[in-house]
Length: 496
Image (cartoon, rainbow, N blue to C red; front, side, top):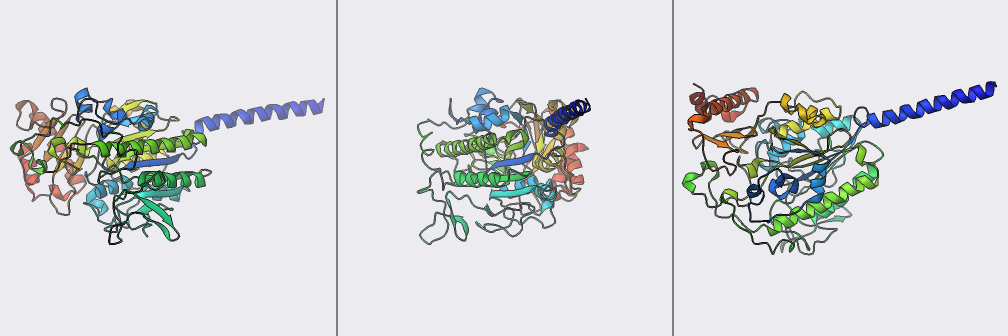
């Protein structure tokens, strides 16, 4: 009898332990366990090339290069369907290095040591990777870094800023073909002088940059999947040169591309900080091909996580560093506050804590990335980080109303002057050292062709945005807005 009683007690105890473990597992993904973090970053990516972003736009805005002309991105769209999409996420400065510096540090470009391209980030900067590495995460970075000065390509930079495994990190360049060698990775294409080149000749599904870097990402996950890990893969595409391997190079060559409606803007009607340029390619076939190749490789990463039962405990981020105008406003590339230049595709997928299909329209900034991700992962946010922690929105999109709909972007420059923009989900006030103030109303004029600065009905908006810009300049010590600049005087005039 005693044996039966003892056996019953042991059985009941076992059931209680089993159930408690099940509860802990289900809740632990959100609360106690350390989730993995996979960051997939692209370079110079126009948001209109992503299906999930086109769904947020009017038809005319979704197809600016002609009726039906665009690329399908089912895998990136899947991340949005399973997570949260931000429609108004902006670069702190719409150029590679300063935007990337803000992303990893949570600091504005004037404080990271990277106000423009090719500056080395300050040694004392604490990145989100350093915090996670100190917390026991296996951390790795694969692909384009662009925060170590002029080195090109410069593999495996000595300063890794918390990315413990940076063997496949290269400082800069938009190379198309890589290979492994006994002494480490190298650019597999060379010119007639033997120097690394951007040639795509002979690149295949193993050597083409996007494929090669994805393979290394999958290797990292395979090697570290039994421990909490962070892997940040940074593709050098779809940044120019516009070249992609077969068969992507011909997938979109039959489309009849048209110039965007903003293409024929007159110089006299354009802001001086972004007038029309001579070279503004209308053909998007190679760019679309690069985006399609990226999407297919995102699918490979998603599939590997699913096949290895890692999906439930892995946060997946899809993000770029800035946009690309792709002939809008008769311009190419980036560097100005127009939407296609300054807006960043940003998606976070983590079904354990993020409601699938969520959309956030508040304006946020690259400086907000690091503090938000760290807080969401239950890590301490370093005091030097200047961005907003909006992790509560990731857990509940209704919390969007708890945050002010406003952010800031500035010109990437090696000088002490440049434009500054105050941005909301609807308005954009731009002050610059060489032009009159501009106010854009994205609701009434999504093409950003009209200056509403002197519109009598918009004066309250102008003053409010100017006051916020002044607060930003003081709080974050932006030299563009210091007391002796034209822009500071513009603010005084507006606010008097």
